[in-house]
Image 1 (cartoon, rainbow, N blue to C red):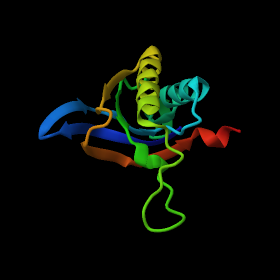
Image 2: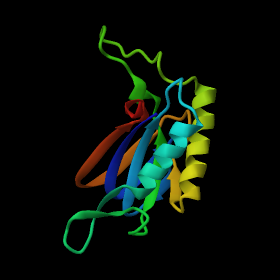
Image 3: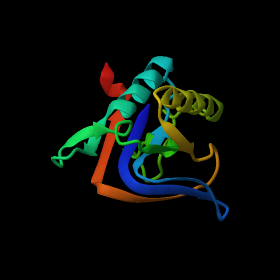
Length: 149
Protein backbone atom coordinates (compact mmCIF):
# COMPACT_ATOMS: atom_id res chain seq x y z
CA UNK A 1 0.00 0.00 0.00
CA UNK A 2 1.36 3.37 -0.96
CA UNK A 3 -0.02 6.80 -0.10
CA UNK A 4 0.87 10.36 -0.91
CA UNK A 5 -0.35 12.67 1.85
CA UNK A 6 -0.61 16.42 1.48
CA UNK A 7 -1.53 18.84 4.23
CA UNK A 8 -4.15 21.10 2.65
CA UNK A 9 -6.13 24.23 3.34
CA UNK A 10 -8.81 22.84 1.04
CA UNK A 11 -9.25 20.10 -1.56
CA UNK A 12 -11.94 18.76 -3.86
CA UNK A 13 -12.75 16.11 -6.45
CA UNK A 14 -14.74 16.83 -9.60
CA UNK A 15 -16.11 14.20 -11.99
CA UNK A 16 -17.71 15.14 -15.31
CA UNK A 17 -17.92 18.77 -14.25
CA UNK A 18 -19.67 18.00 -10.96
CA UNK A 19 -17.95 18.37 -7.60
CA UNK A 20 -18.42 15.10 -5.70
CA UNK A 21 -16.28 15.77 -2.61
CA UNK A 22 -14.70 18.74 -0.88
CA UNK A 23 -12.91 19.41 2.39
CA UNK A 24 -11.53 22.35 4.28
CA UNK A 25 -8.32 22.10 6.30
CA UNK A 26 -6.99 18.57 6.57
CA UNK A 27 -5.31 15.92 4.47
CA UNK A 28 -5.57 14.99 0.81
CA UNK A 29 -4.57 11.34 0.55
CA UNK A 30 -3.88 9.57 -2.75
CA UNK A 31 -4.00 5.80 -2.20
CA UNK A 32 -2.64 2.92 -4.25
CA UNK A 33 -2.90 -0.76 -3.41
CA UNK A 34 -0.47 -3.51 -4.33
CA UNK A 35 -1.56 -7.01 -5.24
CA UNK A 36 -0.06 -8.34 -1.99
CA UNK A 37 -1.72 -5.86 0.41
CA UNK A 38 -3.70 -7.34 3.27
CA UNK A 39 -5.84 -6.03 6.10
CA UNK A 40 -2.77 -5.62 8.33
CA UNK A 41 -1.29 -2.94 6.03
CA UNK A 42 -4.65 -1.18 5.64
CA UNK A 43 -5.17 -1.00 9.41
CA UNK A 44 -1.59 0.19 10.01
CA UNK A 45 -1.92 2.92 7.38
CA UNK A 46 -5.24 4.21 8.72
CA UNK A 47 -3.78 4.48 12.23
CA UNK A 48 -0.61 6.12 10.92
CA UNK A 49 -2.54 8.77 8.98
CA UNK A 50 -4.94 9.48 11.85
CA UNK A 51 -2.09 10.09 14.28
CA UNK A 52 0.43 11.72 11.95
CA UNK A 53 1.54 14.98 13.58
CA UNK A 54 2.03 17.36 10.66
CA UNK A 55 -0.09 20.35 11.71
CA UNK A 56 1.35 23.33 13.55
CA UNK A 57 0.82 23.85 17.25
CA UNK A 58 0.92 27.27 18.98
CA UNK A 59 4.71 27.31 18.67
CA UNK A 60 4.47 26.68 14.91
CA UNK A 61 5.96 23.17 15.28
CA UNK A 62 4.48 20.17 13.48
CA UNK A 63 3.00 18.62 16.57
CA UNK A 64 -0.73 18.11 15.95
CA UNK A 65 -2.64 15.44 14.05
CA UNK A 66 -5.58 15.89 11.72
CA UNK A 67 -7.75 14.58 14.56
CA UNK A 68 -6.44 17.19 16.97
CA UNK A 69 -7.17 20.10 14.64
CA UNK A 70 -10.64 18.77 13.74
CA UNK A 71 -9.55 18.44 10.11
CA UNK A 72 -11.03 16.35 7.36
CA UNK A 73 -9.60 13.77 4.97
CA UNK A 74 -10.11 13.61 1.21
CA UNK A 75 -9.23 10.05 0.14
CA UNK A 76 -8.64 9.48 -3.57
CA UNK A 77 -7.98 6.04 -5.07
CA UNK A 78 -4.95 6.20 -7.39
CA UNK A 79 -3.62 2.98 -8.92
CA UNK A 80 -0.94 4.94 -10.80
CA UNK A 81 1.03 5.14 -7.55
CA UNK A 82 2.17 1.62 -8.49
CA UNK A 83 3.30 2.61 -11.95
CA UNK A 84 6.77 1.20 -12.62
CA UNK A 85 8.75 3.33 -15.08
CA UNK A 86 12.21 1.80 -14.63
CA UNK A 87 12.07 0.04 -18.01
CA UNK A 88 10.72 1.59 -21.16
CA UNK A 89 8.70 4.76 -21.44
CA UNK A 90 5.25 3.48 -20.61
CA UNK A 91 4.37 2.65 -16.98
CA UNK A 92 3.79 -0.95 -16.03
CA UNK A 93 1.14 -1.62 -13.40
CA UNK A 94 1.86 -5.30 -12.74
CA UNK A 95 2.30 -4.72 -8.97
CA UNK A 96 -0.97 -2.80 -8.63
CA UNK A 97 -3.93 -4.66 -7.19
CA UNK A 98 -6.60 -5.81 -9.65
CA UNK A 99 -9.55 -3.37 -9.81
CA UNK A 100 -11.99 -5.41 -7.73
CA UNK A 101 -9.36 -6.19 -5.08
CA UNK A 102 -8.28 -2.54 -4.94
CA UNK A 103 -11.85 -1.26 -4.67
CA UNK A 104 -12.55 -3.61 -1.76
CA UNK A 105 -9.30 -2.52 -0.08
CA UNK A 106 -10.16 1.15 -0.63
CA UNK A 107 -13.58 0.68 0.99
CA UNK A 108 -12.01 -1.11 4.00
CA UNK A 109 -9.43 1.67 4.28
CA UNK A 110 -12.16 4.33 4.38
CA UNK A 111 -14.00 2.39 7.09
CA UNK A 112 -10.81 2.14 9.15
CA UNK A 113 -10.14 5.89 8.81
CA UNK A 114 -13.69 6.56 9.98
CA UNK A 115 -13.21 4.13 12.89
CA UNK A 116 -10.24 6.30 13.90
CA UNK A 117 -12.72 9.17 14.29
CA UNK A 118 -11.92 10.98 11.04
CA UNK A 119 -14.40 12.74 8.78
CA UNK A 120 -13.61 11.23 5.38
CA UNK A 121 -14.74 12.37 1.94
CA UNK A 122 -13.80 10.35 -1.11
CA UNK A 123 -13.22 10.37 -4.79
CA UNK A 124 -14.89 7.60 -6.76
CA UNK A 125 -13.14 4.40 -7.54
CA UNK A 126 -12.58 3.76 -11.25
CA UNK A 127 -13.62 7.26 -12.35
CA UNK A 128 -11.60 9.90 -14.17
CA UNK A 129 -11.28 12.61 -11.52
CA UNK A 130 -9.99 16.15 -11.36
CA UNK A 131 -8.40 16.69 -7.95
CA UNK A 132 -7.82 20.25 -6.81
CA UNK A 133 -6.00 21.17 -3.65
CA UNK A 134 -4.28 24.03 -1.94
CA UNK A 135 -1.20 22.46 -0.34
CA UNK A 136 -0.45 24.06 3.03
CA UNK A 137 3.28 24.39 3.61
CA UNK A 138 3.89 22.70 1.28
CA UNK A 139 3.80 19.52 3.31
CA UNK A 140 3.84 16.29 1.28
CA UNK A 141 4.73 12.82 2.55
CA UNK A 142 4.94 9.41 0.90
CA UNK A 143 4.34 6.30 2.98
CA UNK A 144 4.77 2.79 1.61
CA UNK A 145 3.88 -0.28 3.69
CA UNK A 146 6.48 -2.28 1.74
CA UNK A 147 9.03 -0.46 3.88
CA UNK A 148 7.63 -2.11 7.03
CA UNK A 149 9.38 -5.43 6.49
